[in-house]
Length: 515
Image (cartoon, rainbow, N blue to C red; front, top):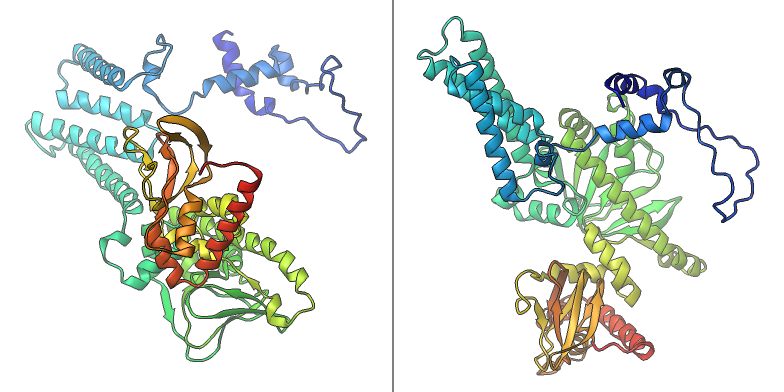
C-alpha cells in the first residue's frame, strides 16, 4: 500500500468503523455446513469506495499500526524473536551511544548534558507507563539544568532563565505525581500507624474488597466509630441513606416489611448500593431510599462514612474512585452469591418460624478465597464461616526451588499437613515411582489429617506417599496442630471438618484416590 493510500485510510477510519446493522426479521435456519454462502459482510462506506480502498483491508491496516506499548524489539525489526535482558542492554547502550555521537557531530557546541537530556526525553515519551515517563522526565529536566548552570558556567542567566525556570517547575510537578504513585503502592497499614481495630478492619473487610492500604488511610480521615448502647437503626426502609456502614462486632439484623430477613456478620459493608448511586449522581446530591432497615443491637460496634466525604474524595482522586467502584462491585457480587445460596433454604423453611427463614450473609472473602471455597470446600460441605476461620489459619506453601524444597508430604512420615493445591500441578510417588498426578484445585493428605483433627490421638497417622508440587503452583497448608486448635476455639470448624471428611470418604468409595 502506498503512503498516500495509507494516509487516506487513516483519515477515513472513523467512517470505516461502521458496525453491521441488525433487524428483527425472522432468522434463517442455521446449518453446520460451511460450504453454503457466508454471512454477507457489510459494504465499505461510500468514501472508501470512491478511493478504491477495501473496508477489511483498511481495518487490518489500522490494527497492524498498533503494536502495543514501546518495546526494545521496535528498535530491532530485523530480529524475529523476543530480546533477552542482555540483548536489551546492548540495544539500549548502542542507541544511546549512536544518539550522542550523531548529536555531537551535528551540534558540537551543545553541552554533553544537553545531549543526554534529549535522549532521556526520547525515552520518557516512548515509555507507556506514566510513572516511568515522569521519572525519566525528571532526569531530563535535571540534565538540562546541569547543562545550563554547570557546563555553561552560569545558572539562571537572563537568556537561560526561562527554560531553567520551567525545568524546575517540571521537576516539582513530576515529583508530585511520582510521590502519589509511591503512596498508592505503599503498605501504610504495615507502618504501625494504625491501632489494632483499624488494622483488623482493613485486613478483614477493605483489603479483600480490593481497597489499597493508602486508599484505606484516606477513608479513615472521615470515619466515625460507633458503639451503641441501645438498638440503633443504621438505615430505615424507605428513607434516604446518607452514610456507608461497616459492621465491626456484635449483632446486625436486616428487617423488611416488619420481618427479619437477614443477619449480618462482622466486617460486612452496609449501604453500598446507595453509595454507588450517590457517587454517580450530579454533585453527589442523590440519596437512594433504603430497601430495608438495618438495626445495630446494643453492644455492637460499627464504623460510618459520610457519602458526602466519599463523593469529595472520588472527585479529588481517580485512584480512590476506582478503588471504591471495585469494592462496591465485589460487595454486591458477594451478597448476590449469598442470596442465591440461601434461596433453597428459604423455600424449604417457608412454613417454619420466622427466625429460621432469615438469610445468613457470608463473611467477605478475598477473590482467591472465594474461588477456592466455591470450587472445593463448599462442595465438601464446609460452611463459609468455618472456611473463613480456616483461611485465617492457613500458611502459604513455597513452590520455587528444587524438588526437595517443593516436597510437602513425605512417605511414611507423620501426616501433619493438610495441603490445598489451588492451581498448578503436583505428583505423588511411592518408593520413588510416580503413581498419581494432581491438578488444582485439590486436597492433598486430607483424610489422614482430618481424621487426626476430628478423632484426636497422641500420634498422627502416617502419609502413604510423597507429594511434590510443580514449580510455580499455588498452595496453602494447615498443620494438624492448627486444625485441632481451631476445633477447640471455633464451634463451626468441627462439624465442617467432619462433613469434609465424610464427603472425601464417599468420594473414595466411588473413585480410588491414593491420598
